[in-house]
Length: 399
Ligand code: F3S
Image 1: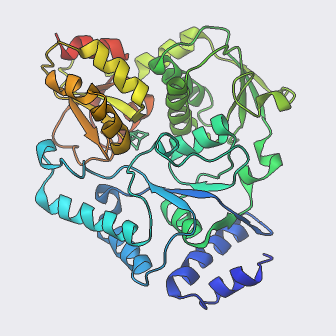
Image 2: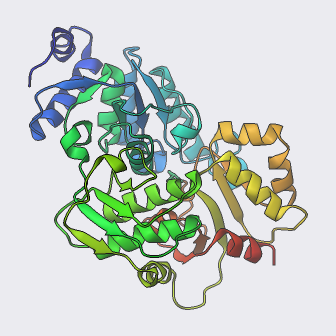
């Protein structure tokens, strides 16, 4: 790789051991992907924050990186942690887990990272511009940033995003390059897709159809005539989970889509296939649902407002979590939205979610409108799952 004078100084340890380690991670990645150079970044998003996923080895790595007092060089935010930092006791988190989770967050804070603890950094102050190079590590946010914003990031791992944040650069390969962003598969949608559950199911259907394919496509969708921010948020999370997609285009909707000719390789996804994806991820036998959740990815302010209107004056009779970013919760609190929701008995949970919180042994069956949530609730927590719409969930928890 051709490194600048500054990059060589970082690599050679002239700026300290932690920065040398960070640079070594980036150079190793650059070599794997045959990159010639690094590219400066404007922001980073770090995943691997929950102590449930990190364990003691992860915490040791973070402490090693934090000990020298090095600080991130770009705006850097954090993915969800394993608990609501201010309200963990009410969610049944043990004191031992909480103590370790707080040490994880403290190590990140020592490095100058903002503990937003959200998978929607673009909703809470970490919003890159079109064409910005960034290093993000949350798969749903990576897909959203590339596709909906037109920023450029590969799907980083926790350590490589942290290394990029500390050095302010990342190897220039893959989705940082124009050629990496070219669509390779035309996907036609001849039906109307509406609502977050349906967009999530579309992402899952796409993943199922391409299951086993050796090619990681950049799809370009046609036939989708409209989509809201929240639907695109759900779709980004789903297609990233089920197909490993880090960039998609939608004709007339996403910012780069109309620059490209449609590729020859062509696929049609029917309404029937989308509906099959919905059914496939619901446990067939009737099982009693003991955990309901909305907010994967984290709920936007608008979603909280809509849910509050639907819940107002009702009583929630089941365990029901609405997960969101703390800054979003705080704005909603000032607007009186959180009070309306919590009076019903639902819990507005910040900083965490149904996947990264250590709740695996507490519940048996989870119902959500999130395709990504369903995937991990089943594969990580071994829950039975039910893939429902927001309205169906609200009807069940208040029945
Ligand atoms: Fe976010 Fe947790 Fe879902 S990190 S995308 S709410 S699995």
